[in-house]
Image (cartoon, rainbow over all chains, first blue to last red; front, side, top):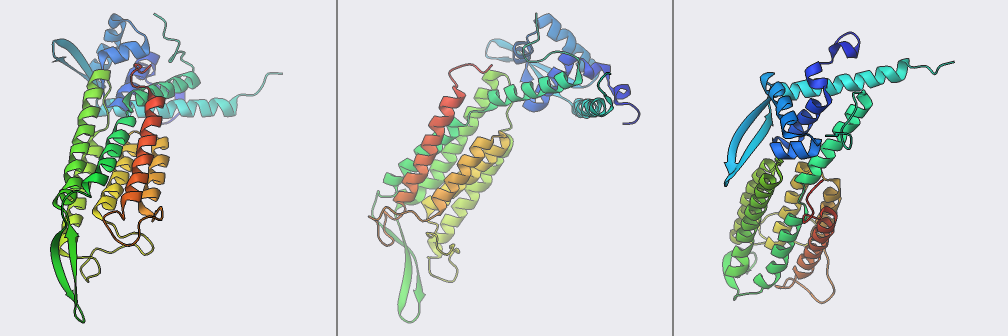
Length: 107
Length: 234
């Protein structure tokens, strides 16, 4: 992690919905599609798009199955996803820290 | 559809505070602290009549100089109650957490809790079996803490329940449960007598079981009201 923290931010993870998905998946180990949809207040289509981006980047895995007759989709964070989330949070904290120390009131 | 309520803005502060709020919500959805507390309270209260059932049987007797002997006395029901009840309680709690996790759509860290339960069940059952063949007051008897009641089977398992709750507090990252468990362990390990039990009789450990069970029951009711499982987590 070198240079200004903004330079190290990964747009893929920095996007607020995707960061939310990774945060929830990290905390829950495994999370169901409907929980993400309800908690992040997204439409199913919008959530699917974000999940597709994260899956293609290898940050999550998506497993589909059934609970009785009901179709269920479970999202699990990969090791790469875990590392990407930790990196993003560290950079956000650095960024806040540098903002607080460099900012001077106008006038 | 708006996403402002819990999670909005690309400002780093708002992103981090939004993440913290999401973590809080997930933890709230994962927690079901009331269930293990109520199950363990039931097991503890049921141990009181179970320890009084059946005639006393002599276990191993060890001669003690100059001309005496020390024997273990136990009842079959009282002796077998705790290992069976503890394992059944643990299985019920693990199954409950897994089913609830599936229903709510968020995983839980039940693995460490189950592993801790297996270790505790084996250790405590081993300790009780050891006591059967090595009576108190003999050289091979399990050590007791000076000033405390000797750890009878019921008290040992109450201690095991406390350890299981500590693991649960860690798995749930639940500070309130941690404080409750520390209080519970203090209650079950310190000598408590209401004055109507003297010496070592079948009733010796009833005050501790009753007080420990009451702490678990009240804690369970408190968490039940706080977590309100009948209301779907936000």
